[in-house]
Image (cartoon, rainbow, N blue to C red; front, side, top):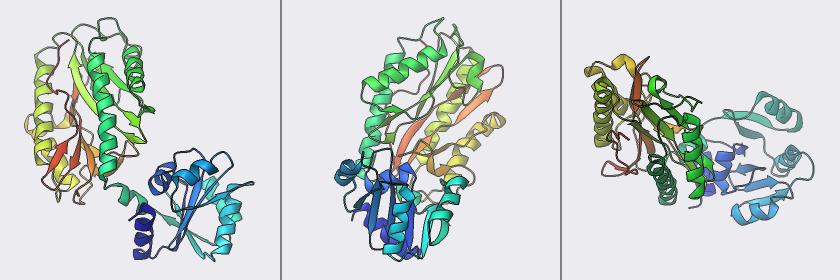
Amino acid sequence: MSRVKIIQKKMKDQNVEAILLTSPYNLRYASGFTGSTGLSVITQEKAYFVTDFRYTKQAADQAIGFSIIQNKGPILEEVENIVEKDNIRSLSFEKDFVTYAEFDKMQELLSCKLEPLSGLIEALREIKDSTEINTIEEAIKITEYAFQEILDFIKPGVTEIAVANKLDFLMREKGATGVSFDTIVASGKRSAMPHGVASDKKIEQGDMITIDFGCYYKGYVSDMTRTISLGDPGEELKKIHQIVLEAQAKVNAAARPGMTGKELDAIARDYIKEKGYGDAFGHSTGHGIGLEVHESPGINFRNEKPLEVGNVITNEPGIYIPDVGGVRIEDDLVITKEGNRNLMSVTKELIQI
């Protein structure tokens, strides 16, 4: 069954008359369209894709099963034409994506009732099919290649930003279309910053270095963290690395369908707390990835929804000690009938370069 048919079935189940899709991620998921301008109106029986003259041929090739409409004036005027033609009384819009200004414009131009909607498409996106998983694996291969190559680049005096830029280049060289997020390279005391985006700090002998990065490949992301050191980082940081490694391994061993995000998060959190570093682990254990680098399901204390086969999640516990340093280790896992499969293969043991 095509994705649009699955969406329409869910719309019928939830009594949603019609949806206006403007989020580029939801648009790509529903239609396969990879261009930068367009929107879609999906009713329980029909699917329309509206774009301008630059993308009509591309939309016709990619958005199979959609009626392609070219807008020559404001794009919402074509939406109003669809509303009138199909006698749409209630049009649901993506409340987590539409700005107030856009909503104001919609109210001005559209003659139907506007209903805020959240999560219908996103819930479908949580379950990845084999093609999506294969694409994520390709993105991961690119990321792992870049990590292995960067080890020879890191030397005393090289700046964090130079390492980040090199990583980004290496990934693009292998086919990545962009980075999943601003590359994190945090060395020395800065490694105690969970999201220490690369700075002009020079990496020094004895520094612990947390590298958190990923890429986009054919629309899907990778997300990987490894913590290495330049020389010997000292006993405390080596001890912390081992604790994080063990906590991370426990999550990898436990993740399976039926387990909630809250339960999985507790495995890493309880172990780190047991080792005396509970206060030093302040973020969630993981999150879903796919078309976006942060998707549901969340692997955190708030998520009591069971994991399902096809979820792709990160597993990234960490310990951060201000003025000392920190460690985070992250894999991407796909939930399977048997438990899970780790999509990453690069070592997580402490590499001292």
